[in-house]
Amino acid sequence: MPLDLNTLIVRPISGSIGAEIDGVDLTDISDEQFADIRTANDTYGVIFFREQEMSPDQHIAFAKRWGNIVINQFFTALDGYPEIAQVSKEPDQKMNIGNLWHTDHSYDQVPAFGSVLYAKEVPDVGGDTLFASVAAAYEGLSDGLKATLEDMNACHSSRHIFGAEKSRVSQVEELGSRIGNPKLATQNSVHPIVLTHPRTGQKGLYVNPQFTTHIEGWTTEESEPFLAMLYPVSYTHLRAHETGRNL
Image (cartoon, rainbow, N blue to C red):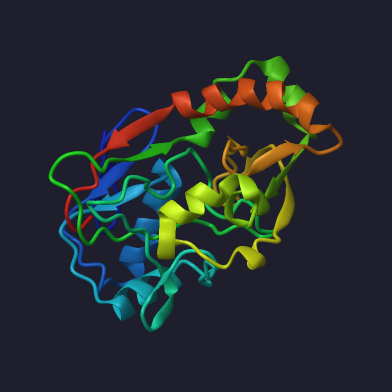
């Protein structure tokens, strides 16, 4: 059922995650409209706005309504706008960025609340962006596993993804100028495996195969089979959503 708020009607697009909002111009929204947008995001986890036209300054202004902007140190920034990280792939490039399941910036001590993505140019076929519900993943666990995870932490890192490791030479060469600054990949963090949403109180499973390295207090070898068991649970609850031009 659509979520009927004071200023908008929000239509869910799947059973687990995601909703679309029409009839709003993100460059000109009132405080009341933004409050409803935040409520929709809290409810559905990810929200989509079609046919938006935003300048870089307007994109940044909308992002700032959610909180302070976390500057990504590894993606090539839009010229003159360090707050905007470009996620690009040219037709002749084979490797895309972010092709594995991940939670943005989970390697930071204080991870970003979310990402504000603006699709400028997408292919007519393919190029889908997939989102998964960590809340649905948690709810799908048995009561016994939920109790086991309650006081457990996991370690996350940027080093093995963005750092200058020999095993990544071919990947770095393929990504070219799209990703850089390997010397800045020094971030390590520890977060609860089960996080609680600060406004809704909803619990979510907070591990991902891209940045999570091991369980705190466990060796990597001990952690791998346990985490491997959690990852399929996390990403069963997903929704394939074609980005479309000007998402």
